[in-house]
Length: 184
Image (cartoon, rainbow, N blue to C red; front, side):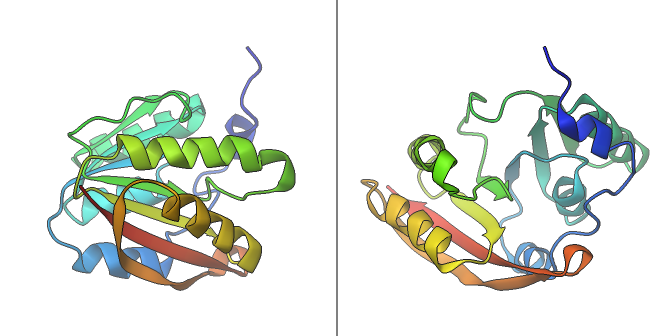
């Protein structure tokens, strides 16, 4: 199996920097502090932050380097954060997961639309009733419309908890944060 490209990137600690300010403020205020499944967690930028805020977090990523770094920090700080090496496309969502976090997982580039649509449909379907889907993606009208179109086509009702933008200072970018709660 080919080594994941992020193993090379993650040799630099904190490769992606700090979590988005909008993510931090949302999760600081959100109750209850349940179990977050952070798919594509990398080095644990978000997972570790959420663990410090009192959440239980399971992080999944293909990068053994990133997962190892995250688990070391979680252990050192006695956080309820556990990283697992795995494929986010096939990782089993269970009823213990109250929140699914998809940070920079969806881009809806032309070559990826079908695959990402199916992935998002599976997340929506597998998320338990009253579970939360927290999606962060690069700002862009076309991709934001695609995201909302896919979710609106599911058979579930959704309550929008956040639909706004947040800065990503490390990369001088703006991200759309779309956080929704499933009904039924």
